[in-house]
Image (tube, rainbow, N blue to C red):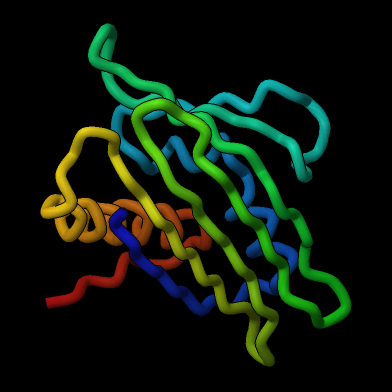
Length: 150
């Protein structure tokens, strides 16, 4: 499995950072050829399943994810969200942690991502692409300018 970690610091309070990074449908605006459907109108919590659909026409695939831990930040405590990928093509898990800081919040996204039938030698390529794509997602959702690294 490819593993990658993304961290961002923002002046937003932890509760606002949490609200933004767990707005699942909003993620799709920043991931090419992807739509996200959350089938319930209730607030997200443990057991919520949502589906990211990526691709075009018959070349699309579904990436269903289930929230298995949901602890919003409160009273100076970090927010912790854990997702399990439940699809037949994309495997793995993700964690999104939002820590309050003196100047706002610190967001940490860690993803373990596997693609069925893709050999392990492809993991570094998947990790690199994941860092770039999800780094842009976080930057956009937290209203931060993109960070360009050499």
